Amino acid sequence: MASSVVVSDGVIKVLNDMNLVESSMPEEVKKHKKAVLFCLSKNKTTLLEKGKEILVGDVGQTLDDPYVTFIKTLPDNNCHYSIYD
Image 1: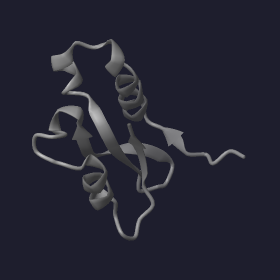
Image 2: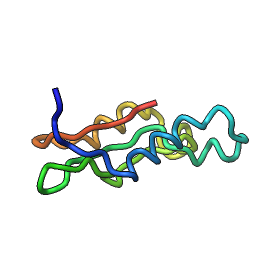
Image 3: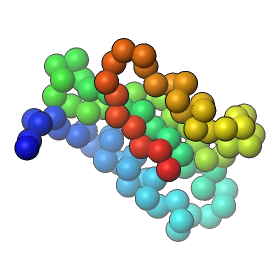
Image 4: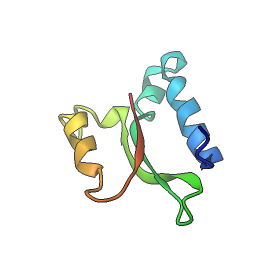
């Protein structure tokens, strides 16, 4: 069943970048995203980057539990999509 929602190029780039973590140098890994939040455009046709993210390098540095931090970024009353690694 098609939803007619288009995934933006930015979302595809984020997903591809997250898949490359294993082949990166240790300092580069810290810059990779651990979690990213996405939302629908106003006309509900395009999946967009929301701008909320957790970086691998933040874990243990600026936040202790990335999952709890991720849950707190979720909105109470809107549908959003996410990638959590």
